[in-house]
Figure 1 (cartoon, one colour):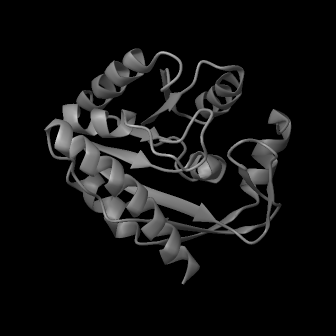
Figure 2: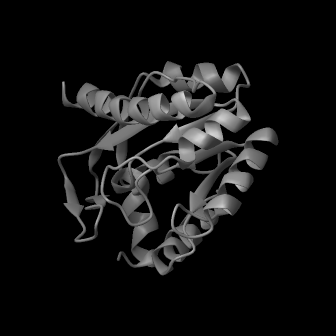
Length: 199
């Protein structure tokens, strides 16, 4: 794990190159509730880029979750505790409540322990119940370390140029059919935004 004192000076050196920012801005300007959808591995640079923007993140109650929650709280995030493996029902209720209160939510659907890039249903259920859109985003850089964790977390090196892209936002239909379709769309949307960065 990265030492907390190392993160801030490292992150301040990063340079972001952003694509399709209008997809995010339209949701903000339209005051529509929405959920950021991102893989756990790209959490660190995306947390830094969106700090102090009235966003709540769903974090695990595990030791790793505590480490990330301390960092996120320090840079301006609200926290919703729980995950698919720890306090899932509480996390879902907290996420819906935050959306109803006008906050944006960020969820890593493969967290907190994987499997890597495997979408769990919590984000789709939250979007269904709150009537929220889902906005996929991804970050990539050629100058990074990869941790030996289950998610191979991306840690950009000092002065790294980080490419960040937003995908097309989408809604989730109600019912069991909507849940299944939403799970498929989450996976394909994240694959699509990653492909945008590769071209």
